[in-house]
Image (cartoon, rainbow, N blue to C red; front, side, top):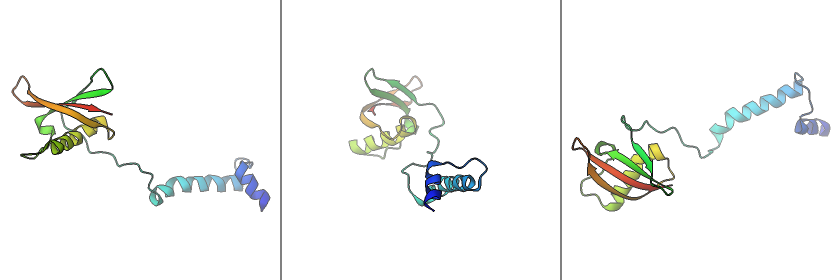
Length: 123
């Protein structure tokens, strides 16, 4: 029994052998069953972002400047700065990822008169 366990550990059986097939089967079972038993911390795929492109440029340091249209951001009427910051972070996450913090923001009008948010963020 000790010899068999040692042979399994060092993978000494040739391909096509019964013990080789057992080892491969155990590995495949591990690969396909463990995601259902353990939480590996990965997240499900995100929903698709906005239907139009979001502009992201570097700010020259390690930050990003993200331009969003008004329709991309869901901000309640009379929101506080922290609520605005949270809404902007949620709006840019599909593009920048989770590990981003919003530093500051401003609003401008584009050539068509639509409101555009400019968000400065760091990873």
